[in-house]
Structures are given as C-alpha cells and as structure tokens.
Image (cartoon, rainbow, N blue to C red):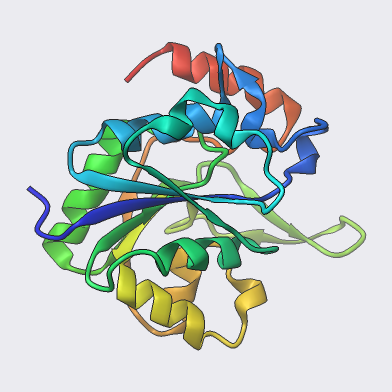
Amino acid sequence: MVNRNLSAVIPAAGIGKRVGATIPKQYLPLLNKTIIEHSLAPFLAHPAITRVIVSLAENDQWFSELPVAKHPKIETVVGGTERVDSVLAALNMINDDDYVLVHDAARPCIRLSDINKLINEVEIKQQGAILASQVRDTMKRSDTNNAITKTVERDNLWHALTPQMFINKQLINAINESSQAEKITDEASALEMSGLPVSIVEGRSDNLKVTREEDLKLAAFYLAQGE
C-alpha cells in the first residue's frame, strides 16, 4: 500500500517529427489504438494511482477525440515548448508531498510489473528512482565527424527509461533551482544537478521509446507478447 497520494504525469506536448509522420508520434496507430493510449493504460489501471495528468500542446486537436480522454482519472494541462516545461506545468497541479511518476507519452510498452517495482523502491528508500536497463553493447564515443575517439566502459552504464518517480516537491524544487534547464533531458538529471540521490531499478529492455518508424513494428511485437 502506497503511503502517499500517487499521480502520474505524461508530457505529450511534443511533435516528434523523427518518425516522419504528419501528426505527433504519440497519436500514431499501434494495434488498434494510438501510442499514447497504450502508454496511459497501465497507469489508469493501477489501483494506487489516483490522477493521470497529460500535458498537451496548446493547439492539440487529437487527445480530446480519444476514448481515454473521458477516463475519470485523466486530467489535462497545457504544456510548454520544452519537455521540462510540460512536466512542470503538470507537477504544479499536484500536492507537494505526493508521489509523482513521470512517463514518456511515446513509451507504449511499459508494464505494470515494472511500475510496481519502481513504487516499491521509492517507498523503501524514500528517495527518487528511475527504471533503467543495463547497457550490453560496446559503446563508442565519436567526434563531430563521426570518427571514433573512445570506447566507453560499459560497467555500471545504464539506459535511462521511464517512468521516473519522485516526491513531487523535491522534483519541482530541483527543476526550479537548476540554472541549466536546457540540459534537463529527464527528471532524474534535475535531481542530480541538485545533489539529491536517485536510485536505479532495473526495468525491462522492451520498454522502448518510439522515435523512428521501425520502432512501431517492434513496439507492436512487444505489446503482442503481453505482460
């Protein structure tokens, strides 16, 4: 049982042009639903999550047409030009002492089991935590001409995933205190800049983010496998 109120935040104000579609990637079809509907489903189904706040572009014309928009847990807010702005707009709707899970709108393969692992970690340690998967490939660093400059040691190297979970006030303060907002590519980085500890919870590697057209087929395959 979660000892604080728990909300989920889904920043969905981005355009996501890398997929090459004429609509934002979160609204692309995936197994008879949209990507964002799959991304929202586990949070809406979780009994401990009472609110799911979706940050939308001011001119969004798609979300309100989805059946999920009428779900009683769903709330919406106008997001900003950057991801961090959209996240902050939603965080400001949540009580300071509540827990918050922040999840990418374009990660449709998140499983309830991983959400539960993350919640348990934060409950035990009372500090922020993220889902992540271990790096298994050999990693190379290049220069601006794509010439290899270094092989990066992969021990203790992780792919950061979402959701990421924090006490809301800590996350808001970390974002507001950061003078490098443009470098906040995920929520954990804001806490890192503030010197606050964040734990890693190993998550499933199939929790992919749809960024390219080929990711859609892979996401469909993973979703078809079920929990």
